[in-house]
Length: 118
Image: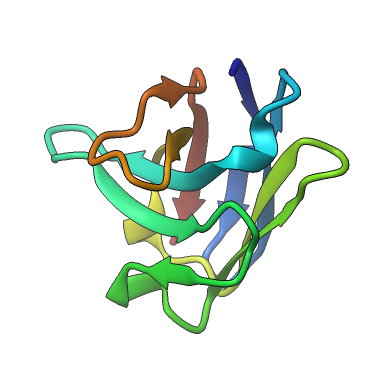
């Protein structure tokens, strides 16, 4: 699976961005998908996750109620809608894929920069 993330940019606090991750390969629907972020000098965090069939999601506490992860298996795509953005959301965002039973994410996109100005 090859992943291509897009949609990052510069936005003012309180604004919105929608990140998209396009996947290649016919097996996309078999993978759980996650969005991670990493700010300079900080560890990489799992921001949101969605299971292969979309029936379960997970969100980092700090983004609950503001971010929404979704997927379209017919289009091989997973999105992250980010609303009410805060300066602390500034980071490079990555999409990643893993099989449900796996502990680690195996496939990673190249990252897209999100910058939220105060």
